[in-house]
Every structure is written in structure tokens, then in C-alpha cells.
View 1 (cartoon, protein in one colour):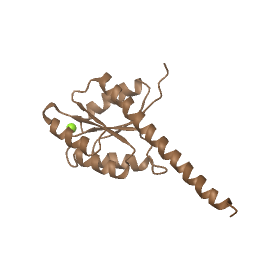
View 2 (cartoon, helix red, strand yellow):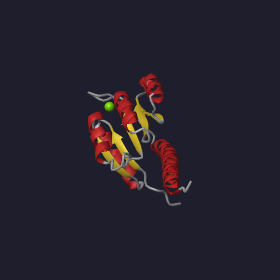
View 3 (cartoon, rainbow, N blue to C red):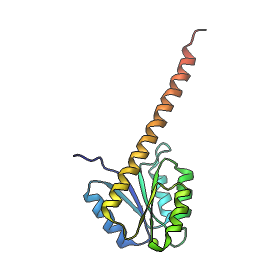
View 4 (cartoon, rainbow, N blue to C red):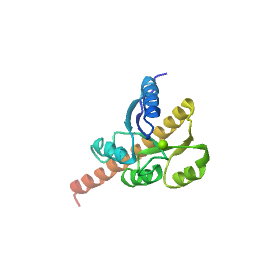
Length: 156
Ligand SMILES: [Mg+2]
């Protein structure tokens, strides 16, 4: 079965983790970008945003990072790019924070150390959700455009 590549942004302050995960996801056929802080993640998103929709489908976001933490980063991402799905990475001792993240708009969360197959499954599900939402936006845009041009050509 041919799988469509997912555009993924990994955000984690642990460089080794980011490198290993990037390699595995790239080998699995996905397009991967990396950021090592919340701030860097926001600039990557801004760079990949030609028409208000960043060229990123899913973000894998570490909760525990120095400076701006994952929850703060998540809130900014969802405020600016509501359509981009976020999967949080959290430690076993921090499930409470995951709950907070889900309430702030995260698609799902994973406990570290993350199981690769579990992550892949969640990435696919998140991408499906994003695609469906983008599809609904496009449809509504097309309908709005038709209404406007209908108004232009109406002869009453
Ligand atoms: Mg960390």
C-alpha cells in the first residue's frame, strides 16, 4: 500500500531524540522538519505559511522544554494555526500536563519513550483530521465564492 507522506515538525530540546526520530520518520517516507525550542517552532511555521495554512500537517511537540514550554507553545500554535494538529510528548510523571494540553487543543499525546508504531498511528490519525478540516474550509470557500459571483451575475 502506498502511503502519502506526512509533513511533520518535531519540536524537542533533546537533539539526539530529534535526530533519531527524524531519521526513522524520513525512512518511513515522511517529510520532517525539526525545531529545538518553542520559539524556533513558531518561526518554522511562519516560514512555511504561504496562504495562512502552514505546509506542516502535524507537530510532535515535547512538553518539557526550557524557556517556552510545550503547553505555552501549543497555545500559541493553536491560536495562530488552528488547523495544524499537535501530538504532545510527555513523561510518565506528567500525564496531568497532557490533560491540560488536550484541553488546549492538542490532538493527542504520547508517553516518552515513544513507541514508534504508536506514534505513526497517531500521526496518520492527526493528518486525516487535518485533511478533513482543510477540505471543509476549501468547500466553504468555494461556496462563498460562488455566492459572490452569483450575486454579480444575477439579473433581478
Ligand atoms: Mg524536553
